[in-house]
Image (cartoon, rainbow, N blue to C red; front, top):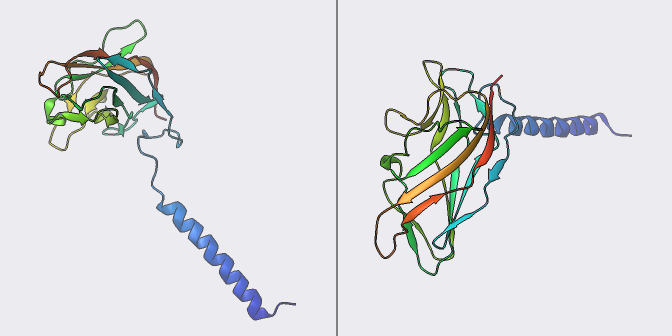
Length: 206
């Protein structure tokens, strides 16, 4: 039979394990991109089928479900990203600032996005090596503004937000990305492209 000291040692070890588990759970941060009151599980990302233009494949990625933040100044990160795959045999550069535009439409509806992503957000061309792929996440947020509209805007470290839309209501939308580069040069990709669109569902946060 175990002595009293042995039983106390066992209980002390069990208590230490329990406390360590509790500490770990408290230290794990919440998943990014959650609206106020949204389910804890982060929605999966979708990838469009690649569109090839002049030897380069373009794909857009985005979270399948967006939550409209319930509180003023709340934000949701939809995870909009552009993947560029260079299938040519030479390095290429891509101008994104002022030429990259997100498209957001309801089924059968008009375009909601009013302008491109400004050059200040992508001041330098992006280089993609021959045979390689690069993915850039667009600094776009769904924001509950102080006038209580929920709008799509471009996040910046500088004061002010570059608003892309007016109030975005709950519903199903089609999202895509367009790019138009006119810069010339040996390493510059120039042309126009429009990705395939993806369906996203926007719902109110609880």
